[in-house]
Length: 452
Image 1 (tube, rainbow, N blue to C red):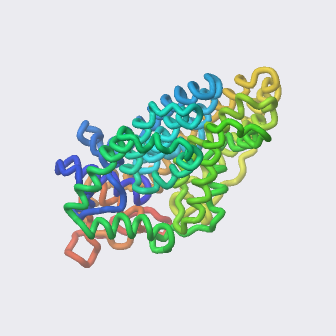
Image 2 (image 1 turned 90 degrees about the vertical axis):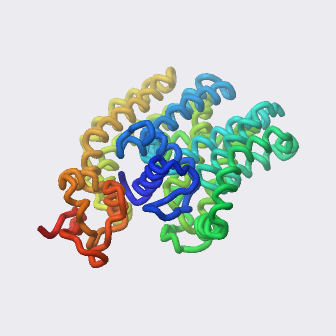
């Protein structure tokens, strides 16, 4: 488990599975109304299925990511052609944003998958007035509301604006009932149980306050998401230039994909509190645009060449990742540039330059395979470092349960949530109650036990 959110969500889901109360999210016995329950339910089912404390929070999210990719490929293939759909699915599957959030137990991917599926199901309605899929679209939009609250209907505004001439199709009983039957029961039940407490914490603090106050301590400048989106598309970022074509947006479906991306980018940029994962629901739209652009562009040689050369940045990114997760990217310690990485990236780049004019599919798949090789390399080299330096799991295992009897003396927020998760309870602060030992954090960030 990494950071504060992943162990916290996993602890809430584990408590749901243990208690059988699938309505109230509880963190160490107290109601916790930061997020709606979809991610908790997914992780809780992992615990019910007998998965361990590390696999249960992540396997359901990973499976959801893979299943969405298969559906995404088939959906876009039906709308834009087999090759465009395959390009888009491969770009999304090998983009840094999707790869990163497909393997952590947080709410961003469940929101992105359910919301994006809802939007893509409405493409036939936009293009041809075919409303047969709107009931399922509304149901999935309701599921997105269960994933992360009211942000999903806000992000869906471009769909309703672009299709405003046919908006009456959404007023039919099918879409309305589907949305309400999926989204409303949990909100109704938890409101009846907790009334004003739920409204104040969930809507006022974690919805409205996130927009205009700095209480949540994630304030970033307005331009924050521009590099985040570019990094999320890596290594395919240069291919986005192919979508800037004059006259290309006569297709209403492409206009919608562009509006979906740009509206979300502007909306999240205006919100005071910003986190990288907020942009994940925009990535399927951006990758769909890029996939169609790669299929339809006359020349792709230069963009694929640059994408291939960008593979050389993988060792640099892997080297800075542990430090970035600990102290943030601005304070992280960057490793020295490894020229050997550029040498390794040169053969794929040369292949792209040679084959792109005649067989763009061969050049494209060389870059995709380069990403796969990079992921395998990072898994073998960097993830063990994260386990030792960022997660508390290695420390917990090394103490063989001794840490469970200790109090916490001076530990940062991220590691505190991790310690509580692996302990299965909230460890006491030293001074609150007698304890035979103390867990404290050294200057280098490592944890240690002090005392007999």
